[in-house]
Image (cartoon, rainbow over all chains, first blue to last red):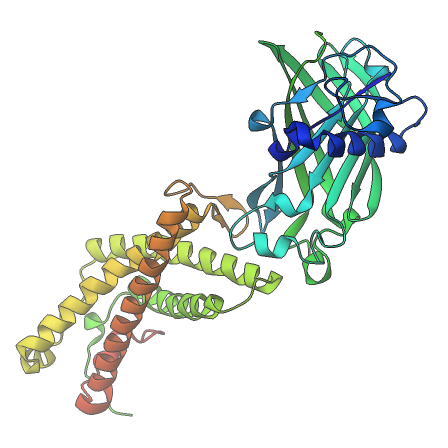
Length: 226
Length: 188
């Protein structure tokens, strides 16, 4: 099985940063059956020996994220008023093959400090009651099983970890391909209090609703055709 | 208690009196809440007050539309002859000017607040139920300009209300001409 890695953060797309990329690939591989996972960074020239050592498969063009067209947004309601937010920095790793979803995996990592709602709310988001970014800088989603449900539609089951709380979730996603780009869109409904997001005084759901919609749009390059 | 000198037919109608007092309470309350909000740190209580303030503002705007239409279709009673005779020209001008400006601000203050909320990217959902359209697109620079405009207009309205109350009290306490009878709730 190939593990392909890529990161949304432009800074990490530079060749110098491949060591970091590969290291995170390894990190996420460990979350799965490490034995089955191999990493395939862009070229054989990767400077990450720990990962490079396990590369046994021929080099396959990696799936890369088109960060400028990809978004991770969320919607929450405050006294009935919809509030739109987004994560500005996130990373994706996937070997997704539409013809073989059962052997595909996808991992996402969100920089919680990159969450943005409004000028007034943003300074609050990093505080312990909300994302507690000092203690929990990242949220992760790691798939455990992907199955096709209809042409271009899949169900991605996996573990979502936010603020030290891990929960099993199933995200229905849609895949479209055009002009060499593959677009995966999915929406997940969460309850923020399940993850202690908005703790303390903010647990009052009559002010900020418990339900939060997360909308993911990933534009990827290099995926196998459907 | 002096015998009121204002005959019943010179009083405002019941609808006009009700609108006057409901709006008086609503406007003063919204002003106090708006002022309180300014230096509150972000908290659930603040979010609640912000929304109450917006709901009050939209309610004031809606009632002001009703009030203006009512005013335009129901001629208010003329000033009692002796009072009108005794008022110098400048007082008459202030009387009309204050009322026109107050009516202008009944609309301007809530509309500026609504536009400010829109520019900030927060749609107003009236009483948490009815989503209202945005007056302007989200625009932080515009929001920064609308905020002081809303505050200035609100202070202007408060100043006019102050003059209005002072003039009414002057008629009641100094002139003792019974003018307040025209707007007293609980008709005779």
